[in-house]
Structure formats: C-alpha cells, structure tokens
Length: 83
Image (cartoon, rainbow, N blue to C red; front, side, top):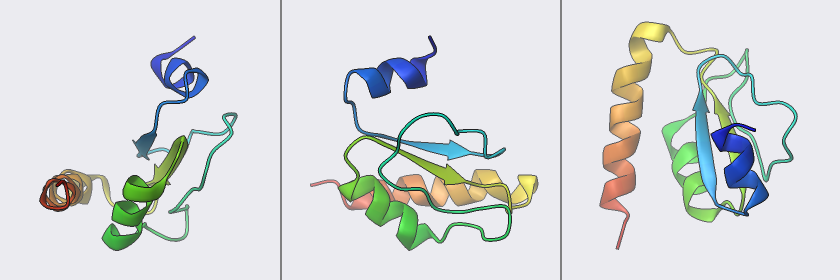
C-alpha cells in the first residue's frame, strides 16, 4: 500500500498535484483539471481549503515546463491564506 492509500485510509485531508492524471481508484471529494482543461489556481486553492479527504488535481493539460512555476505560485498563495 502506498502513501496516498495510507493517508486516504486514515481519513487525512490531502490534495495530489498529478502531472499524469493517474489517480483513479480512490474515492475522492472532488477533482479538477483534465486532459482538456488545466486547473485554475483559484479552483485549487478553494479545493485545498475545503476538501475533506482526497482531491486529485490533474496537470495533464499543462506543459511540463510550466508546472514548477505554477506549483510554486500555488504554494505561496496557500501560505498567504494560512492563518
């Protein structure tokens, strides 16, 4: 059993930023992004603040070179909302 499955089994809240869209098989509270639609930053932020359980975010539509900057921006935005 992998880390993701153990977190899910113990009811931890987590969001998976998935560059390959391979998170099928676990129940989830919501999923955003697809092969045709990159996730918007505001959608990811709302999902991370309100999700109870597992929520996959697909980065399949986003160019690989754009992913690090996108994730860094999400991290900074999330840190700004922690209080």
